[in-house]
Length: 347
Image (cartoon, rainbow, N blue to C red; front, side, top):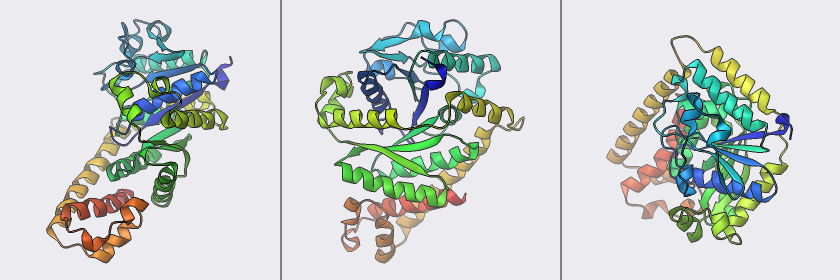
């Protein structure tokens, strides 16, 4: 296979607990079942856990590759045709890697590009330099969100910081933990409109994943749902997502994405890393968010104002009548979710 035909996708999320790693694994297996050679790259340098979810114990990890002790092909694991580069917990963020370590990591990705059709990078949750760096390296970014307001606002913040890195790759969205496909599309539409309005970034829709008992139990059993219950609704969701990913045209080559990442990082001002600035923004956002919540809890919320905010949320949320919502904490959570997104755009 040609190195130029390999596709690199980075899966990320604004917060933990949205199912990103499970989605990465099951999407990789779905692509493998369609005949593609796929590698999942565990890029969570804080809490690597893909091998745990596959019930495998690696002898070597990405740390050995970064420190030059092993090649990436020597540390790979395999599960039902899916190859895995096991991550290493406790590594420092990418920004703290020395030049040799960064070069080793990029070389590992280039080696994988020579062998695989798809490389799925499972980054850490949240906003860190490592997450943003892997998002820059990818040709396509897949953002995982759920209907929870905190998931949406944190994902919004992640994209807000990401665009400051001058990205050239495209961003797509997967909505997890929905009741049905219509809910997933509704949440995506509201989220994408907010992102386009306040950030100026266009994101498209890949698919939704329904809530399912098999999906939850598969994590405890350390056996991906697409293997445990291949004919179930969730497995069908992953097959559809794999179809969309494999059929989608990508104008940016992996080489161009990596080259852009290197150029942008080399141009960063000495003594002041992008992460420092970004973390300052996030600290201010968190401070304002805490103040906003406190203020809302201390004051009465006008029901007509609350209804305006509710209208921007999901149909399920809109069904709640403001006059019946006497709990200030509930009102605060809903109002804060929208105001925080607007506030983040102005910080």
